[in-house]
Length: 110
Image (cartoon, rainbow, N blue to C red):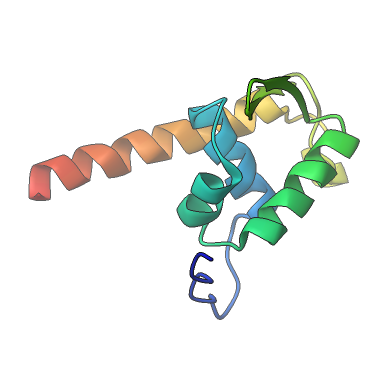
């Protein structure tokens, strides 16, 4: 069985739901194990989050062989009233920009 990720203490800007959605956006056929490692969550937590995202209309999946292929619903509006005009696509766009900068910085220093 895989290791349980090291817990994080304190607060963060992004929720675990946003992290899982971003991980799926970068690879539409990820394994739950890979998402859990990327997000530093347990596989059980990732399964619950995926279920929440599907129930909320943010995500769908189709079984393809032995794996799932996920489809993000980009036009879905975020849940909090303060973000009532922000779509999933807009949020993911911001996260992709951040990830690209982080990758570029790692290349320069590594």
